[in-house]
Length: 268
Length: 240
Image 1 (cartoon, one colour):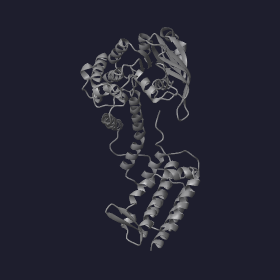
Image 2 (cartoon, rainbow over the protein chains, first blue to last red; image 1 turned 135 degrees about the vertical axis):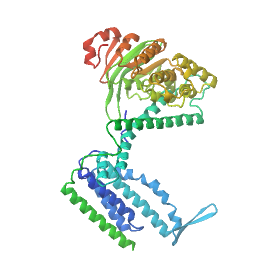
Image 3 (spheres, each protein chain N blue to C red; image 1 turned 90 degrees about the vertical axis):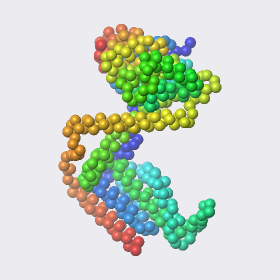
Image 4 (cartoon, rainbow over the protein chains, first blue to last red; image 1 turned 180 degrees about the horizontal axis):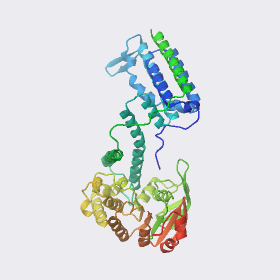
């Protein structure tokens, strides 16, 4: 049995799936930049960005609910921004007593916190749509096309390739452990061992996995070197982006630039 | 008396919908030694992983050492895991502890046996596989043949009634293979061994079961089955 659930790609034949990966990649990164650069409290811009993101999801046929649910993983991370509630000076909204310290939440701080929450949620929606509608090898190609350092792209590629192998290996280790986790029908024996012993076993397994990953990386490197790898990742020249897709790219960039301008205006 | 292994009309589908087992029925009596033959992807490993409850019974029935694996509780499942020693094909998967001792001791410690008993079990199991002096060695540094024997010791220490081995001779050199065959011959447990090594099947196992495409296609005396060239070729096997 192999692990597939790590791969977010979902095949389909929507316009979003068909769009050139390079165009998608550049537009997604620009979208995320525009979103994150929008100043706190620029609600009209957020609404427009959210509308764009929802339209793209609808076009991609991935299912609005699915993408929105997946994007919700951003929310716990956005909680790291919770302190801005209390650190930004401004009109007092409510007080929280924390031991000896009294924290005062300001209206401005609250506004900024919810802006961050919303912005990370919208950005992630777009990132998930990109990953779900583009096969990973094409994403790598897009990264190469926009001149992300080749070594970095190669590392992404190898990571994606071997993450599955490693996950399979971990599954087999866990299975082997389960197979020997037995009990004898003799009364008075407490099965399972002590917590410390269990921790030691799990630690041993993690160490084992690490050693094997290291061994494997040596073997992979040897196999690459045996075929002439010299530290430089080479690839075919990339095909041109079709004209229609170029038009989409330019139109998308203009819209995002306009939104960026609007958000600056609102910020000022 | 119950049968050691009794599988009736067992079917299994992987989460992606691939039907790996389609109505498999086999019965293995206590003390019997049986080879499970078949090409890659025939369903041998899937069947084996059912025998101590790693895969749940989806359809059909599997009784192992008197316990019905369908709808058995956690306690019974643990008893099946103690009664059936499952030796995986890749010894690296089976050996997950830092030292040989820790690995062989895993089963008995998990069962909650007292330390003295655990030590005795480990010594005995390592002696059974002729690896007594390897107790403090690091599993990672052993040869494949040594790892295979340690993997068998890791289940012998649980004193199982049934041994189920997946491709025990795969990847061994002739001497390693010979040593493993001699070892399997010495072990008294009921045995079901999945293998492509038809010569070993001929030498060790009076009875063989041939699987193909998720079904049992032949079940009988090894000599008779291996003499049937048409049967072997039809199911991707080759006369030794």
